[in-house]
Length: 213
Ligand SMILES: Nc1nc2c(ncn2[C@@H]2O[C@H](COP(=O)(O)OP(=O)(O)O)[C@@H](O)[C@H]2O)c(=O)[nH]1
Ligand SMILES: [Mg+2]
Image (tube, rainbow, N blue to C red; front, side, top):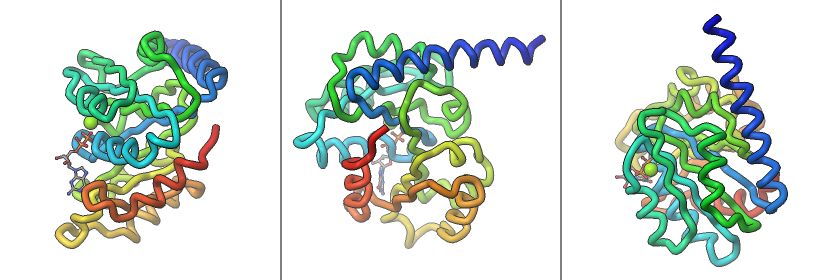
C-alpha cells in the first residue's frame, strides 16, 4: 500500500515535470538542476558563472532552500532575474514547486539554473523538467561520495568538483573519485575548479556555452 502511494507521487511529479519541460522548449530555455550538499559551493559557482556569461546569454535562476532568501538576494545583486522557493522542510525541489516558480519568471531564451536544496540524496529522485542535472561536490566532502550517493552521480550530465584550491590541504584521491564516478556513469563530464581562484572555470564556462537540450 505504502509503495503504491510513493509511486503515485512520483507519477504525478513526472507529469508536472513534463509540463515544465514543454514550457522550457517553447521558450528555448536550457534548464540545469544544480544538486550538491549544503556548503559545497553551488551559489558561489553560480555567481562566477553569471559573471562570465551574462553579457552573452540570458541567465535566469531559481533558488531552492528550506528557508530564507539569502541565496536569491546574493544572486539578484548580479542583475539577473531570480525566484526563491522556500520548501519549508522538504529536502528537495519538486516539479510542482518549479511550476509555481515559473509563474513568476518571464522565461527568456538562454540558461535557467535551478539551485536545488542542499542535499545529495532526495533532489536526485525528483525530476523537475530540467534538461540536465549537474552535481556539485567540494574537495572537503571527500572522494568517496559517488560510492555512497550513487543516484545523483549516475544521473548527472556533469560533475563540478569545487574548491580545488583546497587540494593541497585535503586527502582527496582524484583517481578514486573518477573511478567511482566512471563505474556509475561513463558519459559524465568532470570539471575540477575553484570559484575562488578561477582555476578550471574556463572549461566549465565553455561547456555551458555549447550545451543544448
Ligand atoms: N576555498 C574555497 N571556498 C569556496 C569555494 N567556493 C565556495 N567556497 C566557500 O564555501 C562556502 C559555501 O559556499 P556556497 O556557495 O554558499 O555553498 P552552497 O551552500 O552550496 O550554495 C562559502 O564560504 C564560500 O565562500 C572555492 O572554490 N574555494
Ligand atoms: Mg547556496
